[in-house]
Length: 180
Image 1: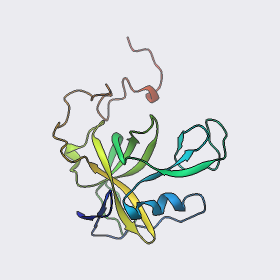
Image 2: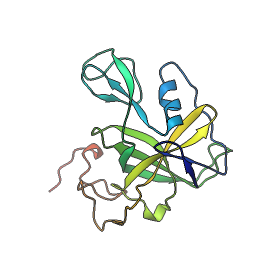
Image 3: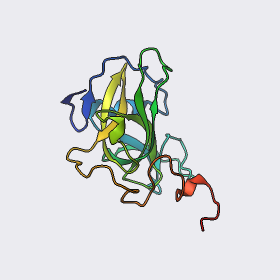
């Protein structure tokens, strides 16, 4: 259930209490950035590459000038699953877990939850937008389908040519193999 928006992304009101992540020197800026409704990701100030999870040194250029910068909060579902096991007593199953690729950079992904979307309507390539759930002092980035996304589930693959979930053919990270 989505409540009134905070500036930018909306604040999600849930019927359960999420576990608050530890706020460390390296991660506090990420976990608290949603307070104003903006998702911020660590970015190398030398080469411009986004780094998630946040690291003190850029993996591309070894630059040490890493700072958190706002991103659009838009992305696509790269992969997803329905969790049916109660890993955390305060978070009742079932719920959707997704790997969301942000539009700012290929390969820039967040492992997150999908909200405001039944499992039957989720597909690889689904356009999503960030929203946040409060957990202690943290604002957990969650994602929901973009408003006005009426394109529906594609019959075969999606705009990027990726196959539906459960079909590993054609996915580069699914392994080599000869596809004749």
